Structure formats: C-alpha cells, structure tokens
Amino acid sequence: MTWTAPEVTRTSGSLVGNERETLEGFLAYYRSTLLGKCAGLTGQQLAEQTVRPSNLTLLGLVRHMAKVERTWFRERFAALPLAPMYAPELGKDADFEDLAEERAEEDYTRLVQEIRLADETVADASLDDTFTHNGTLYSLRLVHVHMIAEYARHIGHADLLRESLDGATGY
Image (cartoon, rainbow, N blue to C red; front, side, top):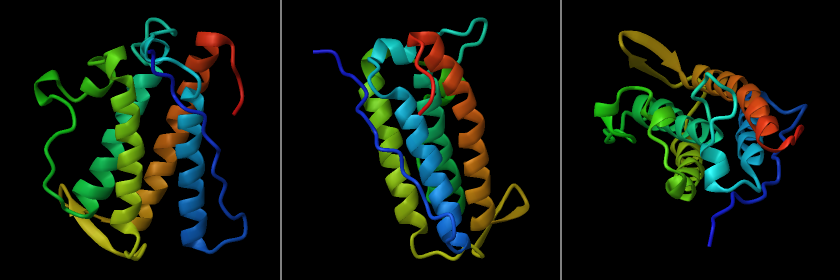
C-alpha cells in the first residue's frame, strides 16, 4: 500500500489575542499550511524535484522544518543534548538532499512529532525567557518570530512545488 500524506485542517489563531496567543496562532497556522500543502500526495510525489535546477522538494521542506523545530525549541532554547536528526556526514543540507520516498511517512511523522515536542517544551516558559547561542542572547519571543518567518518563506516554496506537481494552488 502506498502512503499518502493525510488531509489537514488549517489551524487559525486569534486575531485579537495577546502577544503569546498571536505568536502561537500564527506559528500554528503556518505549520498546518505546510502540512496541508503535502495533503493527498504520495511519498514519491513529495520527493519529486519539480522546479529545476533547484533540489527543493516538499519532502525536503518537511524534513528541514522538523530539524528547525528541533534545533530552535529543544536544542537551543531548552538546551537538550539531542543527536543530529540527519546524518552529519552528509552536511548541513542532508534534510534536503538525503530523500527517500519510502521514508516519507516517517519524515512527515517526525515533523508532526517535533511540532508537538516544541509546543510541550515551551508551554510553561515566558516569551521573555532567554538562552545564549554562539555568544548571542535570544528570547523565546524571538524564536517564535524566527519560526514564523522560516515557515512563511518555505510555504512560498511549497506553493510553487505543489502547483508544479499537480496544479493545485491555494490552501
């Protein structure tokens, strides 16, 4: 049986909430939008390079965002010593380049899990909580803003990739 990415209900946040509700709502919206761009596609479709000469694929974006979620929330903010998600010997772009359609379900599930773990990690933290990375002080607030920007940028890529695959636009 061929795995197909599940349908997703896009999450929307409050348009009049406080700062935390707004940041979490926009992040949830963009997370669900990326997953929605994958809905109904097989592992083979997710791994297909459709916008040459770029090596970007929807599966690569899913893998990349799982790594970014893990890096910013759990490794940097929570200072958890976690093993690399992808083979370090393949370089920093292994998330985009080491694709296998037969691992698509596992990669998709990993992103969903990293989103859940990220949310759990910061559930009781203040947006004013800070951490130092490479000698620079960051706040949890900045992490949320960075993640919103990261998703927004890559959803633009996902729009083009999905349209190139099957003509689907929107979501």
